[in-house]
Length: 404
Image 1 (cartoon, rainbow, N blue to C red):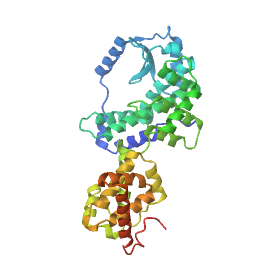
Image 2 (image 1 turned 120 degrees about the horizontal axis):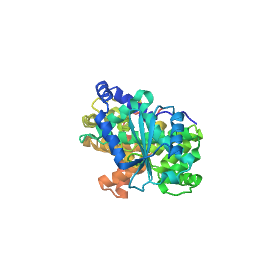
Image 3 (image 1 turned 60 degrees about the vertical axis):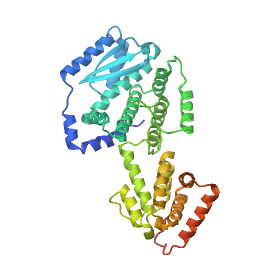
Image 4 (image 1 turned 90 degrees about the horizontal axis):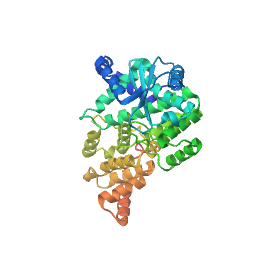
């Protein structure tokens, strides 16, 4: 089994915020005030039953085992939430205090090993907030402070959502480290989401694989990944597969989607768009005033180059994006093909070559017919004229779309 560590996404976001030194300094100096801590403790006492360490010796014994296995210094207090039948668990961290709240009939439903896994998950939240000198607790507060600003962009809402999803998977790995029993961690997750007393984890994993094989668009959970995602992620992580991390990434984030970008994926899409535009304007003849203005509306500092190609890497990158992203890229190319009326239909022939090389034929032709209101015969005629016009262009030896 791999070592327990924050996900690359956590580290990347932490490093991103640390580069904003004033922001990082301000949030790192903010501490929870004593009166806030006391108010939180009072709220806990009002809405829960605090489990007595003598009466409930076994849960406290399991919590102590989890603390030792995670190598943390948490002082654990356990509670049973009142007036709810929902199966759930949560943790509140105040300094070194870890207040774990159980909801519903978990103490009856879960076996000893499953309860150990559950407590391991909750206390892994404590570990997450203390590892790396507490950097990830600071990162969490910064990310959510930005997301809660009504002026914020969608990507700043998506970023902490993903951060939270990965944190839950980190804590599931913590449960595995504590229990040393994948079966108990998986059965705990399944029981909590179904309420069943008996479950078959192998059967559920097959069910989860069916979901992913039919439609893997990434997790849509607001704070926690869907249960099938969590179970598959644990399965891949514990299997020691060479591509386990990549498979988990695909489970959580899905394909690059123009309609669902986080801070880092926005940059990925910008780079892909930039490369596509550079490919589209690679021939000198297409770089008219109108086309240059279009490109600079995307990237003001764009610089033409002959070193970009419609190669296998670009094709594979585009193939792995969402349908919405491929359509977006087709619209970018359509803009290039039609923004300069003085060049007639020659740029369209050039763009048709590009979509052929990049595997975007189907999406581009669908958009072309829709936007230009073309029938099948009219589309065929347009393509023939465009390719004939392109064939008349001279000096194409330095304008090859593919590497030699």
